[in-house]
Amino acid sequence: MKDTAAIMGIQFPKRTLEESVDLLRQVVEEPRSELFHVVTVNPEITMACQKNSELRSIVEEAGMITADGIGIVMVSRIKGDHLPERVTGYDMLLQLLAAGNEKGWSFYFLGADPVTNPKACEVIRSTYPNLKICGNQHGFFKPEDEERIITEISSARPDFLIVALGAPYAERWIHQYKDKLQAKIAIGVGGSLDVIAGKVKQTPEVWKRWNVEWLYRLIQQPHRWRRQLILPQFAIRAILYREGRK
Ligand code: UDP
Image 1 (cartoon, protein in one colour):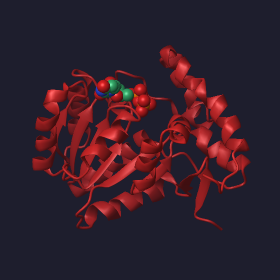
Image 2 (image 1 turned 30 degrees about the vertical axis):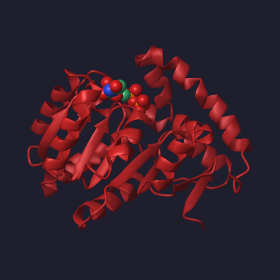
Image 3 (image 1 turned 180 degrees about the vertical axis):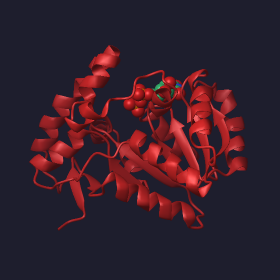
Image 4 (image 1 turned 135 degrees about the vertical axis):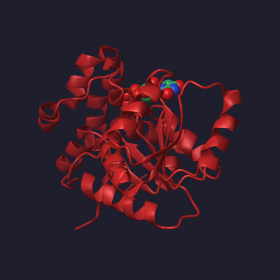
């Protein structure tokens, strides 16, 4: 059996959430000279990669990609090439924070608005007191602040650089500066800090279990409807896509 499933030309590894986190546990314990970029690929990114070769190479060059969203998993099943489950940035982040609390790993949190970022850090600090927060910075900085932020991250040398700038801004930002950041692992986590800080409600388990997290998010954040229009388009195109050609 192949260990990846192709969707619109992107090779998704058939890894569960637990296996993905286990891989990151190994990576962070190894000595590394290069940043290990984790990209959680959702239907929007998959579609954007069809037109945008720069984004496509960011995804292809990543150390690890994960299937972010039930849309990707369902399409893989319809195509007969089963991905085991969705592996979102938020779910990985929670597991990494718990593991980091045991291991004493260091985290730098970049992104979310100026109120939410420190609030999320406060929640993380009190829930996971043994992990180290080696820095934090909200995500609405000016271009002229970028150099200072990169210097701050590289001097902190975090085990994990958590980037909550939204996709694909986070992926581009990590890729652009990956040689300067001196972080072991960097991962874009979308709106995860909003959820941790309580700005956005966490999706209850039952909605996740029934694979309707997208509907819950739509009800909570109705302004997302435009973005979600891409889901049916993605499903049709991805099912009809003949894998094996670029
Ligand atoms: N964000 C940010 N800087 C920006 C734009 C967005 O820090 O210039 C943050 C925003 O506050 C939110 C996150 O990025 O916390 C995006 O969340 P969303 O749920 O939209 O993530 P996506 O699904 O787009 O990855």
